[in-house]
Figure 1: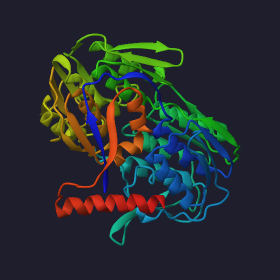
Figure 2: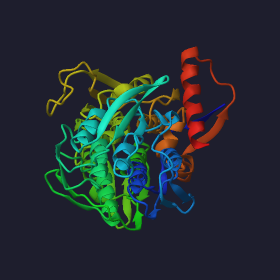
Figure 3: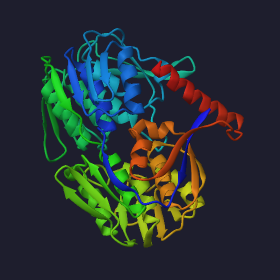
Length: 469
């Protein structure tokens, strides 16, 4: 039996919510704690699916975890590794397993076996950037077939040696993996063209507390002097800028007013600029940001996603929904993930006027310019959205659909809620506290599915259940 959301839209969201700790920070911090045998205490830990899966993964290899979910406090310690084999059931669970290579290379002389990459199917995750960087540090890595799936085998029997690494693209995951492997490498590692997202800075702050000698320069250069002396750590996880922006856009889209406690101004500058360009209202206060509808929204915007400090790709899907409510035509150019616009098909079925293009519209030519990906769109507002039965395909598309349903005056039913659970803590209770007409129920009479769809969904649920039990 599936759980679904029943949403009756047309009600302005009004009130206050607290942003949770960042999913994209906490999951990486857990992996980074594996570098040492010291006790790490984390505060502001989000109670979400991706953290659950990452905890299960870390416990599998020997981490002791005490997690008070209500208080948002997690204490962990990995005195010794039980194994360096990450079971195949974690394959495709999220993007974390690949980061285990960087974290464990300096911790064990045994072969590290890691399943292939997972996460939302929105585009290439550029795993080669990870592997090439780790090889430059001295790691030996190969992809091998295992039963019906494949896995990465990695080791550094001769130890890791610091190196100069220039990433072809400032990939967040590749930067994180390289940083973690460099912490225990001999000598100095210099990472050029590194990602500098706030969650990376949060990781650097944690690692410095742990004992790392690490600096971040303004030209996307990270320098690390290898060490093996570590300390106990207390660390407060940064707030989730994606969740904060999500509630801000939902407030404006429904013509309401919501104060997001914990929303951090400095990490949302680019987002707030674009919000103001279309007439969205916000007030920055000492402990958060208030978002409000400030009259009719105006389109005519050109928006281009990019790595930080550019406009975050995860902000883009709900912002597209916001643009459907803005008068005039706006252009959105996606430069981070080539398949991110798949979610627009459902929005068009709900009444949105969205056209897709393979060309780079506006701005600059991006790395997808010579390929046949639909990575630009034109959004014409103002659209009247109608309710619909929707199956969520990925996390951020899920919130975009939820937001569209809240804007619509009809009733919508949304399924595949495990995607939303991956990244949004207590989502239904937060929405209902803001006045949304949202109910989460068990769908007993599910519509018929094709055999292939049924098999894929059953496999995903079985895998999740195996991981968490």
